[in-house]
Length: 313
Figure (cartoon, rainbow, N blue to C red):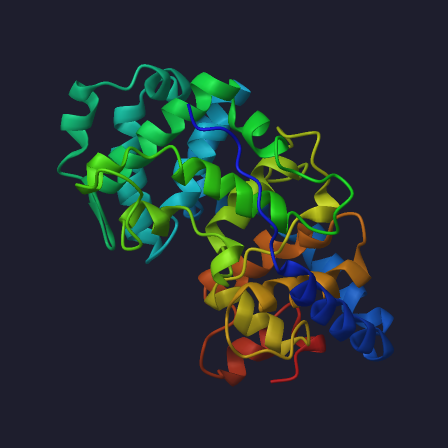
């Protein structure tokens, strides 16, 4: 049985750069940014946007064991256009049934056969079968995903970076290599790696940070299932929408989406809320998803934008 792996990670420099930027930003960060974002956050109609967000699938379950498995699947496939994401997840959750946790614990060759035709952009049935088998092994060893994460989590760390690296590493270590026609080791090109991105690769890890946000934060959208991880340690789930808006309102100086950008934006938001820096994520992301903040400048839409006051575009 594969144990919990332990390695040293080079995230300290990335975190230091982010903190340095945040300190410089503090000199320019007046009360207006916090006031505008807090007002937008507090008046945002969350329920009206749930139907366009993959988190809705985790809301179908009341048991925490089901919710964390549902949330991981929903986050893993949250890439591409919204319509395709929701279509894929609707099909997948039809197979997961009334209890995703029981589905994974009892995952069999028959279940694998029903997933062979699965396809979602960059991933195929083989990738989701690999994920199911890795999760099955993890659940049998640790009972739930929270225990697997906590086995490598440092509660004193500034962010969840190291814990996330090890969490992903340990899930990937539980993928049977024969699925990818290897006798030993998971190939670098294995599609399951795309479903479980790691900060170690420099990726922004939007989907894994999204999963952690759902698990760790208290409402209005998130579940606070993992109570032993602090919201202050979360890293912003950065996608194209968040990156663009973050640049417009001065959360980052970076132009390339990656882990360093995610850390930098989080460090800036920590100036506004040290205990819960990613609380603005859902509202800001949906401002982009619903085209309230268009990729191309639109004078009419920009004039109506609820955070226009702090936008530099």
